[in-house]
Amino acid sequence: MTLRCCGLALISTALLFAQDRGAARPRGNNLIQPLPELEKSLKGKLERITVHGTSLEGNLEGDSADRDVFVYLPPSYAREPNRRYPVVYTLHGYGLHAQQWVGFANVSGLEKGIAAGISREMILVSPDAFSLHNGSFYSDSKTTGDWETFLAVELVHYIDSHYRTIPDRMSRGLAGHSMGGYGTFRIGMKHPEVFSSLYAMSACCMLDTAEVTPAMTQVETIKTKEDALKLSFNQKSPLARAAAWSSNPANPPLFIDLPVRDGKQRPVIAAKWMANSLLVMLQEYAPNLRKMKAIEMSVGLQDALLEPNRDMDEALTGAGIAHHFETFEGDHNGQVGMNFETKVLPFFSGQLAFAQ
Image (tube, rainbow, N blue to C red):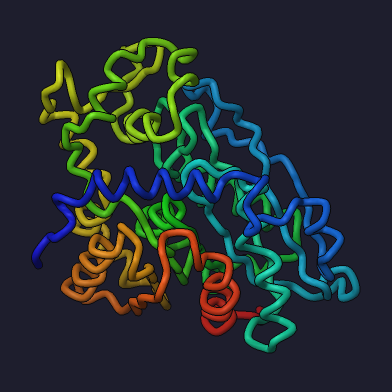
């Protein structure tokens, strides 16, 4: 396999963070429907709940272990009390909160798909993974907390015990966009006993080589959380990845190791970032992905993450992992809502088990 993404890794990562930031603005962006207006337009019900993550307790960033979670219940849920439903867990991108994610790419798409006859009724669950540095990367870290366990174990258990789900892996799907696409692959690789179908939209972080960039060297000067909060959006991304992938409990107050020092790369820390890249993780977890019933991934032809996603497609094929890879006309954010409606949810409607 030719790794075309090596030189593109950090360039495309910076671009995706800039693009995700644009999607994260709740005002002035016609893709995002304000939550009260969204709730009024729904035939089903959107609940905002709080789920405590024991696995997130004591994280060194000081992020709350009580996480907002949005749960969408389809129209028939209230009137058919004996009916159970499959669940799709959806993961938002870097810089977003779950509230914004469900507002522009989530629940409305399902109801439109149901009306059009291309999707079936299911429960959608969207946890909020926003952190001190704008995103947890859904990883296991002393600094940000164990997001893998929270999502794949604690949250799934909570949803199964509080809602009428079909509590079986064949009735659970996992999907996400950008950082959420990364989380979809990462958690899917490690927990095939929980999920049976994956859909990764414009996934990031295929091969992060931790190259020395101006953004990387600029954050060397950050010594406090207060200073970190003053950074521009794009400058925060190295801190977020360091918090997720190179945690250091002995290095307060941010409790991270950056892969650069005095403008030069630190190979040992850079190796940790590489080890958390999807193309590298695939070498260990390919057998788990072969257990999936279905895997789908897509990316826009104008997306800076196009080539890294093509590399992942090639790597999956080389590892003998059945999947489908699709491209479309569009950039990183432009088609998210439409694709969620016309591609992602119909995919799960066809792959998940709807009867116990």
